[in-house]
Image (cartoon, rainbow, N blue to C red; front, side):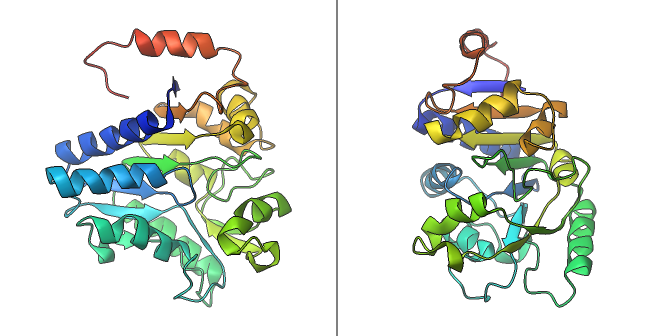
Length: 260
């Protein structure tokens, strides 16, 4: 696990560098896209590179991490609509090449199984963008989630619903109680995981992710078992890291030829 501590704008640039490097080497790469506030600056940077430098997503495919259950197809906070607005509409990524879990399916377990199969049929995710919740969840794998879990329906914790209420006019009762989410094992099957976190409110979750024991209590800790994880955090989110000085030293001494 590589931990990079840098200002927020630099974090977005580094994450975008990783995506650009992948698409340059493999234009038909499979991307894993996250919603929430953490990746927004990354999508802004990718859209800028598309507009100014011609970075192309035309042959790429993408899968979303999760989706609310029951939100109408035209609801602005439905994650497919969010990703369309934040990235797809701003680059040349084909809308039909982007797939998310079907939160409106009549048979939700069948929809989850079909989503898992679609990811496998695409050859798996090459680079997965991630955020982390204040309670250590990734995607919507809440505390207590199985570390071997696959795409499934989950009940959101009160904490997660309160954290997301800002997207629903600060009314927690308008936040859905259920979602479909890629499981921790599904996420762990991606070849490169790039997680971003900013702000002191994420500091404890980042500390547990990087330095805590692997535990379902902090679901993100399963990433410690992955062979290629990049954790991009600002100073505030890194404030609880006991080995912060070491992470800074290793990144400063990183060989020029070595990417994230």
